[in-house]
Length: 132
Image (cartoon, rainbow, N blue to C red; front, side, top):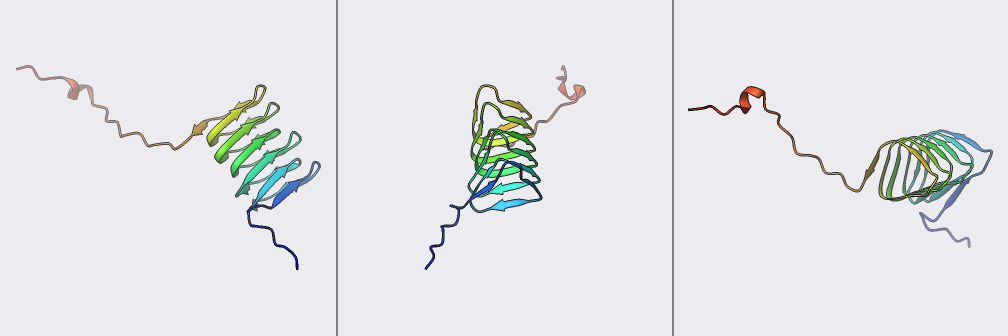
């Protein structure tokens, strides 16, 4: 009788020299040492090795980047940029760790963002107080 692994414990590997084009989804984790052109979604973790290159959006619980990424990155828990990481795109994460030497070009949003109250600008005529 074969044992079935628990859902979410699977580890997928895109080896160096491999090129994948399209949408990639996994209920577990993935390590990328090759190149991916497209979207990557993992229920658990994504790790990008130093030779890894992703041209597309990424979404996972935790993401560690040691290679190159061009796209939007969303980490529900933790996002780590290692020293040789090069990131071009916007990021969203609850926790962010950036090692010295990492390059990041984009916007960063952390934690839950609350909408700003509507601001009302008064016309100059309405600002004047009538003199009596």
